[in-house]
Structure formats: structure tokens, C-alpha cells
Length: 394
Ligand SMILES: Cc1ncc(COP(=O)(O)O)c(C=O)c1O
Image 1 (cartoon, helix red, strand yellow):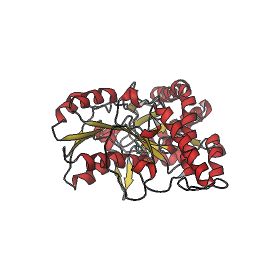
Image 2 (cartoon, protein in one colour):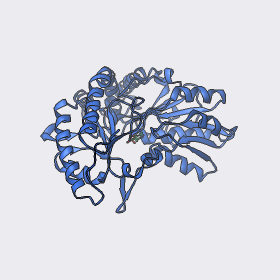
Image 3 (spheres, protein in one colour):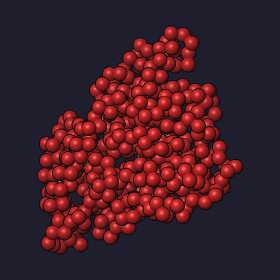
Image 4 (cartoon, protein in one colour):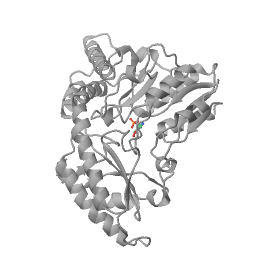
């Protein structure tokens, strides 16, 4: 990374790929037409929007007609859940999701509860997996939608989406998955998964911010969330974000080429980071499923330290990571994801998420390991609860 800074927060956002930026630039300057205009400027913009739609669809194994461009993952999640809820209300008013979803899903469900919908928030086990038996028991004749994320954004655990879809099909229930953290990291194919709706976001896969897509299986009936023009086949009104869409299409095309690197090299780097931490820093623990997970994320708890203290100390040394907990109004709040794992108290506060990308280098991981070891030791020495012990890690 530039300026000797090391960026390991790729679950939050990623650097725009050079080829992505290059593909976008003409659409800010020469080819700035509105894709709905009849003249040549408009028609050129339209052609590029449709080419990008094809790139996104190909990447997911979908048909271009099944791709609706949105402003990102949050809008895609809202569109999926609100769109299904609005249209299928006559059939039922029950939605099933999990306790560890992104706020874009959790808060959409909470908002719908104010409009006479009910939600079941499935618990997860200590690795972050939903239990299929609990899911089966939660389905009622009123259930219209199951929305379970493909991979969790804090711990990386992958949910059994195919099995969820099979179960839902027995009850004619639709399935949405938030795949914001899997698309571009592992192969994601909508036919293989069998889902009815799938959310994705451009800036998580080296595309620009402010662009994303919702995959909507051909036959799926849903209500449009916003009123306006007839853009996106009446699914999402508003002038298309042509540069964003073009960049997003290019980002998908490139991400496909990098999938083998993510699976092999980046997974190996992540595993080395983890193995070294566990063997050199006592009382550290990896959170989430050790096998069923995306290749680029590691969530590690360090006993006797605060995640925020670690994050700030690492930032001062030029390393960007993130913490599982959010600091709200001065109070240190434990992440809802780690809370749902029901971890022992010593693992809740000092959690850090390291998220790698195709740009992460082995040298960067070595540097992070050196700095981390020193920082954890220094912070522990200032902690009142710390007394050095024999090695215990997971
Ligand atoms: C799992 C998940 N869903 C949704 C979102 C929201 O995506 P966006 O930032 O594109 O709105 C994020 C972003 O962190 C995410 O990780």
C-alpha cells in the first residue's frame, strides 16, 4: 500500500482497481449522456450500462434481466426485504433472519415490524452458524421471506445457503442472501445457491462506492421501493449512475480473474497471520468458523485489551484494521455479532478484524505481526486484569 501504510480493512471498503478507474473516467467527461436520452450521447451511455449489466450477470451466473443496479449493499438489502414484504403481504407477514446480519438487514426488519410484520431473529452457534433445525421450526404458514447473509462481515463465517434454500422451497418461502462480503472473494453462482434475491456492493470488490446490485430471480414478484421513472425495468427509478455502473461491471470482470488468487495466496496469507498470532501472542483467539468462511477475513480476540486501544495504536503505526465493537456515545459497546456467539467475557472487548485483499503482500503481513505483538504486550502491561500466564489460544 502507498505511503508505507498498510490497509487490512477490506471488509469496510476496497481500493478501486486501476483498470476500474480507467474504465470509468470517460463517463465523467466525454461520454456523460443520460442513458435514457434518445440522442447519440444517451445511446452510448445505454450501451455501456447494458454491457456492465452483462458483466455482473455473467459473474453471478444470472441473466442480465435479473440484475437491478442500486446505490450499494444497503439499498439492495432494503429493496429485497421491503420489496418482497410489500408485494407478498396478502400471503403472510413473517420474515426470518439471523441475529448476526448487517444493520442494513436487521434495521429493515425492525422498521417493517412497525408496519405489522413480525421477524424471527435466528440465533447462531459459537462459530456463527445458523441451525437448520431452528430454521425449520421457525417457518410458519405466515412466513414470506428468509433473509440470511452469505458470509458475515465481522467474522467471515459462511452460512449453508443451499440447504436453507432447499428447506424454504418445501414451504414456498422466498430466500434473500446478503452476499456483499462473498461476491468477488469466493465463487458465487445464483443457480448453484438457488436464492431468489442476492445483494452485492461495488466498493467491496475494488469497484467504486455508491453502486451495487440486487439479483432478482426472473419470476420473483416484488414491489418497487421508490416512485419515479421507469428505469431498471420499473424496479428502481432514477437516472442511472453510468460511471459507477461501468466501474462495477469492470470490477466484477476483474474479480473473477482474481478468485484463484483469493482462494490460494490470500487465504494462505490470512492463515499465516492467524497461525503466527496464535503461536506468539498468549490468550488470543480466532472468532468464527475455522473452515466454513471466506478466505480474506480473520477476527481475533486478545484478552486483557480493548479493541479500540489496539485499533488506535495500530493506526498510529500506519496499520488500518477494524474492531468488532462499535464506540457509541462514549460507551464501548460489544459487537452484536460477537455477542451472538456467546463467547466468554474475556474475548468480547479486545477483538480485531483483519481483512485482506488481492493487493495485500506477505511483507505487509510480516510488518503487521511485528507491530501487533509489541502493541498487545504494551497495552496488556497497562491493564489491571493482566497477569502473564502460560500459553492458551485457539
Ligand atoms: C454484509 C454487508 N451487507 C451490507 C453492507 C452495506 O453495503 P454498502 O456499504 O454498499 O451500503 C455491508 C457493508 O459493510 C456489509 O458488510
